[in-house]
Image 1 (cartoon, rainbow, N blue to C red):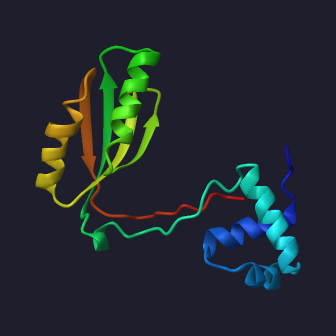
Image 2 (image 1 turned 90 degrees about the vertical axis):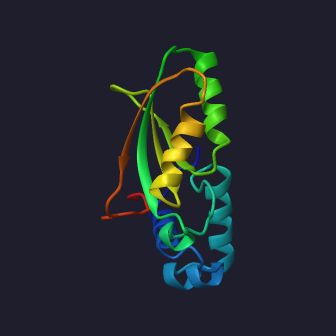
Length: 153
């Protein structure tokens, strides 16, 4: 496995802050040639350090005014049940994140909806209809205090 050095860290920090920088712009900021930047980026992409590239949209400006955190507990546990739940969640576009968690629940979801009513309808129609779901709790976000996709390097 490739070991990330200080130059790679600088590249990754710059990309997390300014994801649209070209190789030439990165080379000017880092002090390497564009071809060296390109080779390093290819290596970081191939080894999975860089998972993917994306534009991050503002949910509210996209008409999704409600963000909720939903915990889900399953009735039965096992590989088959976990796979079925995972498959069901992957098919639901308004579930932005799903994490298997420890503690009182089995999963935590970050969900967006256009309104409280559409969120309520989604809960009743989509989540509670998934086989093996025993218990669901939701918390509605009131205000976004901090949001970042940048991890500490």
